Amino acid sequence: MRSKSLASIAVATGLALAVSACGANTSSGGGDNKTNAGSGGGTKVGVILPETATSARWEGFDKPLLEAALKKEGLDPDIQNAQGDVQKFSTLADGMINAGVKVLIIATPNSEVGASVAKKAQAQGIQVIDYDRLNTGGSSQYYVSFDNVKVGELQGQGLVEGVAKLVPGKKPAEIIEIEGSPTDNNATLFADGQHKVLDPKYASGDLKKVASQPIDGWDNQKGGQVFEQLLTTNGNKIDGVVAANDGLAGAVITVLKKVGLNGKIPVTGQDATPDGLQAVLRGDQYMTVFKPIKDEAEAAAKLAAALAKGDKAAADALATGKTKDDKGNRDVPSVLLSAQLITKDKVKSVVDAGFVKASEICVADTQAACTELGIK
Image (cartoon, rainbow, N blue to C red; front, side, top):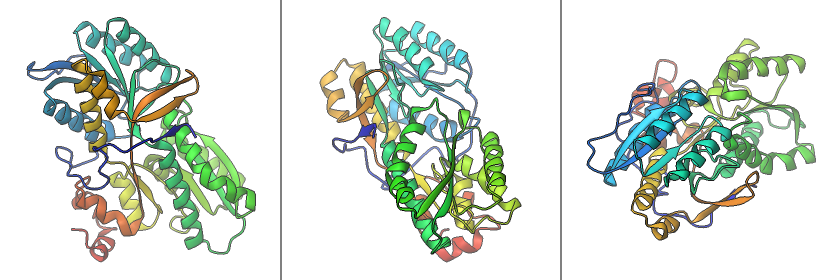
């Protein structure tokens, strides 16, 4: 296991949150090379988000929540999105460094560009926080994310539970794993967590791993193509699918529909997106993982505020966890938050938390399930 939470911090509130300024998990804009700093009334903080192509969370959730949280701390945020382009990421970072930001918060397309940006920023005396994704081999002083090994464990638990429910008595139940990008350390941590749960099941013969394939760039289209090839090779027979997030799960479900297996086998997911929650309500996806991004944004903002004041003791008091960077041979002070496993019977709790609106998930083919579960 690569990360562990040493203590909980006050910002980890589970489902007890009220999300504002982000009613939909849809992109609110692509970001560009221009700055969009606030009123200039506080210390400048730069934030660079990675992309919008594979997950709408960055613009639909992280951006507005980070902006609100940073302003609440009296900071002046400039939030941009690199659109998956490492050169653009570097260019945005250069602009922020030259503009005199005191703290840089980065969620990078890959660890190499993250490490390079952190080195340049630190040479100018700028404190760097890795946000959501740890840049292995880098030098960022702090890391804010969820306990991503635990997220993977929840996916493994969901798969095992789903197999028992949907294909009871099948031994070994055959499993295909569609994992995240190999350049994203989080994908490695998710897989680590999954296998803490699944490896004993593989060893006992309860489950059989047919294939496991990481998907470059978390590309949903490529994920669907890879899964279809693996499924065809296995004679269009499968008993469960580990999909590392809701986007990949959706691609898997599209393929399963072609062979009449959707809803008949468990498919995992992550991020509690509207599309993912709709799939859970339909029964096509067995589970997703809800990660309260508001908590993550607020934790990053509190940490940035402490660093902007030069208060390392306050920053260390927040970063009570440690994450192992094997490539850099170091333990990175971390804020590691909790996530929740969401099956059909728990979807209402995500709506009640304000993370999504009922209108986003209660559509024609899910309305009956919404009514049954009291989602309105």
